[in-house]
Length: 390
Image (tube, rainbow, N blue to C red; front, side, top):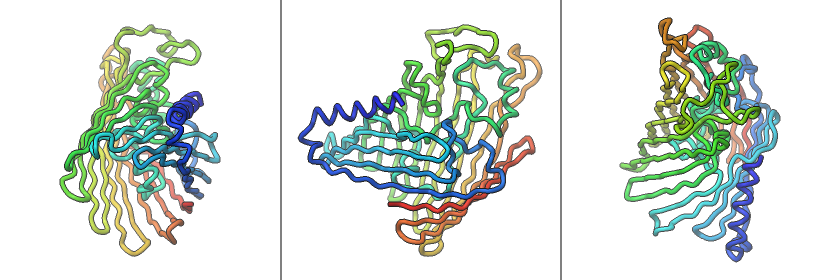
């Protein structure tokens, strides 16, 4: 809540600095309401966000607030309500276009993810044909961010994936981060750089006084085709609310190197291809976490997804998404002895959807998720969602 207040104050200061610009601006409010009925393994937490809400909850309401002060200056905000979580502000930022002709734009505030290609299409443009989101952008690992972990801790947590709600995520689309992003455009080439207070998967990392740096480059060789790469690095650990420091579970080990914070380092590739009645999107990512009390000193995850949508009739579409998630292997003991094991439960996930756009404001989705954990457990979730835009 404190950070939401800071964003509002920052945007308010900008309004005070340039009162003639904003006093005559018109405010546009739009939104969408999703009502969802789900069945089968709906009580699992695999789709649950940190605040307890899920895309499969009964009711979810988003309000989009936009004011265009001038042709080149706009303010955008998103307010979110869910029957399972408190009201929150998902994002609020100032967008300044064409700072240098039509080559340079700037965003300041609580920003959509500047990494990869999922951030904007998950919100204002409503280009997600599914109810769920890619595992990359919400799924939580067994890695705690408020305590140092050892090999023994990770092996113990690896079997708790169905109830885990608090581990580090690789990316986290449900809560935007505070920062500044510059975007540069030149003849089929896009380059952006951002500095944010938190990290991709741990928004609360803003409390560790560190910063994340994100760089993204994309090429647009022709209409409907975009591919590129992203890089992000920043300290991911959050001070314990009880001690104000980072502790190893039960043993109170100090920071072994206070001058070198533990970073989340992420490298990813992204691509999209839109042609005719087809849309294809995909991302592939490697994430490394610095872990000083793990024998290997680093934890790695590889994940990727590919999704496609086919508009096979007017108002009707079919969509499918495949997620792959693989943990690196580590020793079961901090001594390095005892063989090697994956530090989490690997899985494949398939999500499919049938959509019917009843009219311009109304969309009906039938969605099915299948989680195939490689320890031979699995989850199934089916849902019907009525999505109303206004």
